[in-house]
Image (cartoon, rainbow, N blue to C red; front, side, top):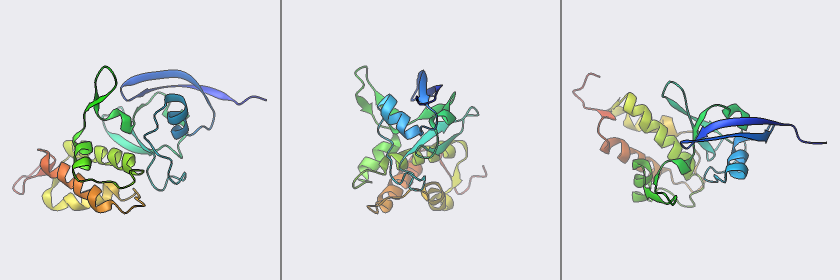
Length: 186
């Protein structure tokens, strides 16, 4: 008896992957870890609750969304664009990270992690939030609620929430164009 497979092709972290024959029912996190050696997304709860496994799905309309890779089959991603935490920073020809994104940099500056297990999910969630705010800024008095809505599903067992939220607030308030001035009517 053999395991039934189907090919998938996707665009991940700026590169085309596939076609690759993948077992039917294989979860995306297992595909990332076992087939692509992209181990940044973490298997936390295995039930889609903690969001440590979140990857970014870039939609054709230019928007993006979080997708929990521990409960979403790899074949759902067939033909889609995906970003993992490994795809954020800029790399040189040797593959070394030479520049962090503003989200990653602020997470370091605020020491926004303890064990770091949930960090990839928070980085991806915060990245999506910043991208959304570039398209539709929020009034200054709505920044806190906006951060809470965006990151509320992410669980940190070390209770690093305060530092994660501080770092995200710092990114949002220090990046021009993400927060509306009080006199703005956008």
